[in-house]
Picture 1: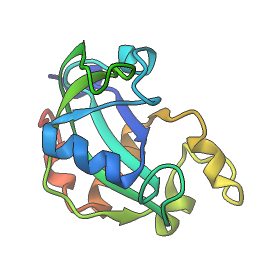
Picture 2: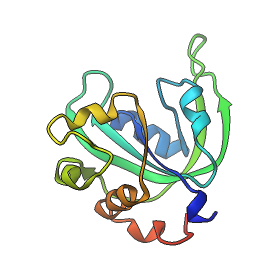
Picture 3: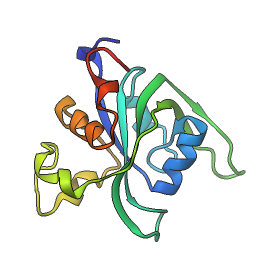
Picture 4: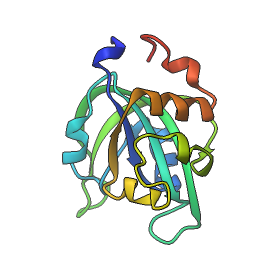
Length: 151
């Protein structure tokens, strides 16, 4: 997919839930809601930011915890329990290292307030510029995967 049509996203999810998604090759956003996933398209690049190790009371983490490419963008629903049927989209995750956000804050343009930077993540999903995404990918050790037309 040409880079010009690719969009770059940050999803906000606890590390514990990110790890489940990486293992299964999928993401859920907004506690399993469909609407956040409808903005994603196959070929879009995605990085996951984890404020905590687990939701809602895990240890503070504040790190990018996974990175990859949206596979097809096809949204599907799964039944985890009788009353929890979250929506998912498949992601091809890369083997990457976690990257703490604090050393990157001053260089990330999507973070407008460098003193109240956490506000940027309050809605659980953020579209970011390619330049910011590539900076995060570099911090995670996978910048070469996002050069040119590579997934």
